[in-house]
Amino acid sequence: MSFRLRLTLIYTGFFALALLLLGWGIYFSVRQSLYTGVQRDLWAATHQVRRIFSAGGLEPIRTPTGELRLFLRSEFIQIFNNPNLVAQVFRTDGDMLDSTPNLGGRVLPIPEAALNMTGDDVSTGYSVVREVDNTRIESLITPLVIDGSTQVVGFLQISRPLRDVDRTLGMLTGILVGGGAIALLITGAGTALIAGRVLKPVDQITHTAQGIVHAEDLAQRVPVPLHHDELHRLTVTINDLLARLEALFTAQRRFVADVSHELRTPLAAMQGNLEILQRGGLACPEIAAETVTDMRRETARLIRMVNDLLLLAQSDAFAQQHREPVELDTLLLEVYRELRPLAGDVGLRIGAEDQVTVCGDRDRLKQALLNLGVNALQYTPPGGTVTLALECHEELACLSIADTGVGIAEADLPHIFERFYRADRARTRHSGGAGLGLSIVKRVAEAHQGHATVASIAGQGSTFAIWLPLNGTEPHE
Ligand code: ADP
Image 1 (cartoon, rainbow, N blue to C red):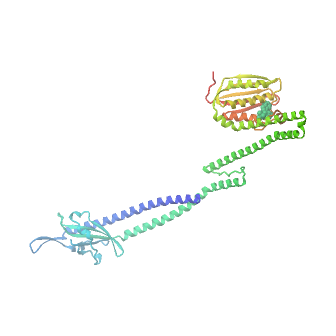
Image 2: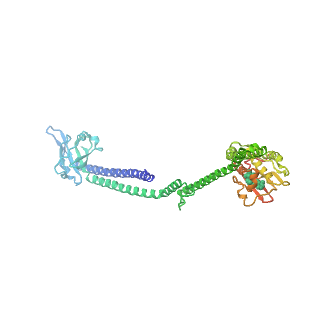
Image 3: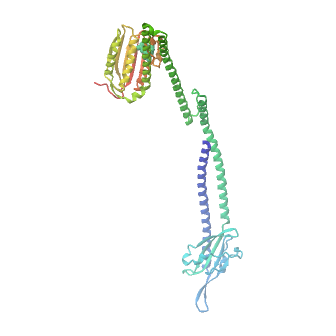
């Protein structure tokens, strides 16, 4: 079942329930008010007839035995004249004595149960609804008593046909059912129409998403609706998601291509060397030694590259897991000591050295600094200087390595932190770098919620820096 149909059915269902409750309420309050009206009529007539009888309808008569008894002058009922109501007088045994002429000579019997009423039931009476000749009739029966006593001398039955009440209720039922059905139809159609309109953009999103899946083309985007509503936000979010996925897949594809490309060169070199050995190189000790040295260099390059890749992949996870206070000044000194043997004729020195502790992964931070230091020494000719420094700038600690080396061309600067990017391919390949060192630096800085920067002028030197947030840790004493 489609969402649109479900929405229509649910909405119409709730509306039907509300209509039903409303209709039920209207019907029963109207019905109640009509029946109360009927009861009021019956009681008004009862009181009227009683007044007639009080004014002479009960005549005292002396029996042959000399006893004084009251005689009901039933013909007094004729005085009562109301075309809508029928009045009847019954003896205490249930025989009808007289009735108003509009009964047409028929007898509407008094119910058996009413005969049990006593003088105490004058004010409550007995009500009954019966069907006579396809007409419902409501009757009110009350006992007739002598004024000032509770002696029952007969029964008075006032009846009223319910034709008008039934007609009114029938009409009301028709209006409620017919009107309700029309209202439901209009609501159902309206809901289906609105649901269709509202869900149209969702359909569009689905179609576009299907198109993307079928075409395997993440460059496609979902058309953004004009109104700034929930669907607009959904579409924009989906498009953002697609853009991120596209970037991720592109990066992954490029990464695989780059890795394959980088692996191919040393592997091809090793294959070539193996062929040299196979074709008789082993017989000549000089060629053999040279070939093995080459192969060892290529193998070392491969191992370094694989290690770097692993480091790159693990940077984020490690930085999350190994968080400890790191004294950056101590770390800088340690890096300085490790770099000193590699410095040769390059002057290696320590500049500003504030005392700062940050929370992070000591080993990764050291690796990043070593990468920068080795690069600086590598790209600085003899006689140049490499300066390591640590400064505290408000909320950030800045670890910097400045050199007076070859510098980096302006065109290369924006790409320098990219994976496998080498500014001077020929020279750096010779030096063995795969272009992963700086991307590790960047990743380590970012894993510590910091960032890495570079400033360089070709021919004059470069300054690389790692900026780390202090995260509430104070410069220590
Ligand atoms: P690699 O392992 O090739 O050195 P990196 O990612 O460490 O890779 O460096 C990328 C490129 O940035 C290098 O090939 C080099 O051209 C350039 N580079 C890095 N550091 C310096 C520096 N201190 N001076 C000049 N160029 C540098």
